[in-house]
Length: 213
Image (tube, helix red, strand yellow):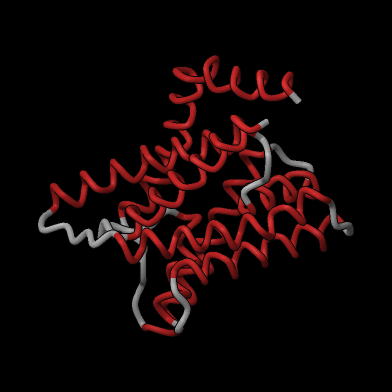
């Protein structure tokens, strides 16, 4: 169990790092980060605080849609505060200012790879749902749709809402660009790549941890 927890925490850190790098590419943020990013740019909230706020909303939405509060939902609350704190740490630590298109594209590619790797570790360890994944899973149950279909609906809804908020409060689009599209197209595919390359080794950690408990 200890090894599993260590890998999970490492995945959370890597995921937060990738998300923050994505916001600094100047090419547009990922769909899942679009609302926290816009809120942090149109209010006094930091990126981490905005992420916490959105994650809590996702958790409450799960409870409302399913009409119950489960242990998995409750565990997402401390996860949200931890994740938001790590996001703020990296946001203040990293001072990435791409000087040209090449460095912007390089930063974007790095962000996609790192985000996918972090997400892969978090999902594979299967300890606590990442709140965005939790709400997508809930929507899939309620709407009786596949997870992929529910995620597409959720991502489109989140991006649309973030565009509306950014236009209303700043009169121009914040955080939307080629990076938003690239993240939507390639993060999932990179997770599949890591799944094929590392699945046996990473799952072995989880199996060994379960046997030792």
